[in-house]
Figure 1 (cartoon, helix red, strand yellow):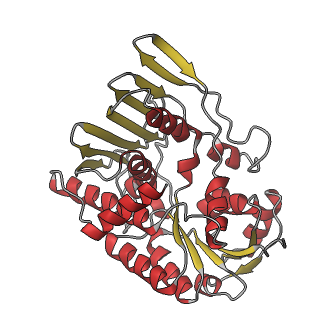
Figure 2 (figure 1 turned 90 degrees about the vertical axis):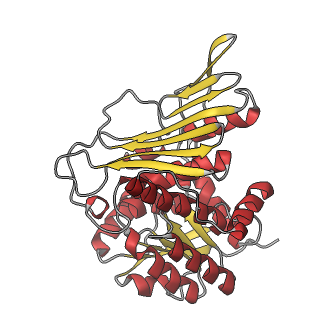
Amino acid sequence: MSTPAPIRVALIGYGFAGQTFHAPLIGATPGLHLQLIGSRDAAKVAAGLAASGLAEATTVADPFAAATDARADLVVIATPNDSHAPLARAALDAGKHVVVDKPFALDLAQARELSALAEQRGRLLSVFQNRRWDSDFLAVRGLIESGRLGEVVHFESHIDRYRPQVRERWREQAGAGSGLWWDLGPHLVDQALQLFGLPQRVSASLAIQRDGAQVADWAHVMLDYGRRRAILHASMLVAGGSARFTVHGERGSAVKALADRQEAQLLAGIRPGAPDWGRDEDPTIVYDDAGRHALPTPAGDQRRYYAGIRDAVLGHGANPVTPAQALAVMAVLETAETAAAHGHSLSLPLSEAEHAAFAADAISR
């Protein structure tokens, strides 16, 4: 059998997400070739690729030209949130497969439009939910699915930071799609939906806590599943002491204290797949009738997302993050923001067909 030609990738955006996550993960995935990068700073791109040990790629200054370039089969969009939908639309219209960094779009209406367009064009559309392959989430997911904790009644997920100084970057400036909930919320929501499905109702509180902050830098969201509650929390003023995950079930409880290390490894210049890549020595602690148990945590590997994308494009596997799943995340993000503004819980504004599509994806996996 002949080996298929590598899938040519155009990465649009070479800021934090593009440089730290996408370029190294794409470069470390067999069958993908980073063909070109949409960026106005060719010198930064060249230096970044060299420092990461990646092959050179052509730099295209105009992001829309890069998104529609004939030399690319797959377009990865890692630009500011307000440009996600226009760039994805252009790439799909040009016949490209598309990966969009989170959040998928600015609102549910944009997300629906892109999903319909991808279906019309017969092209893969996916959202970069790399943290499904984090060690901490894999540990907690495995425990819950094993039944060891019994039926889960309380689930708490934190992504906390200690960044007391407001930085001059688009994520912390006023505008659509900015703020901590739209930055970290997509990860928190996606993981919860993967574990428990769609909630019955959503309630939320968002706040600005740091001096000089323009947008919400604290988020506390509750997903109501009837008997079960899922708490999703993010903050920029937590110096330590909060666990990444806390889970209480009928048969026991579990705590995963520390977060996955892959982001820290990437920031330190470690290449995906290097020795100890994704290794997590922080155990998952389980409490039950027999006492306290320290369980080993599986290694994380975010390369599995792009391996899934490769296989799906080649027709050898399923889309790792489908439009139906991405729509569901968008619905929770948008509903939480509205619930916080009005001070009461809300149900998700998803149609019966969208509910069914999400459920069908869950069953197929």
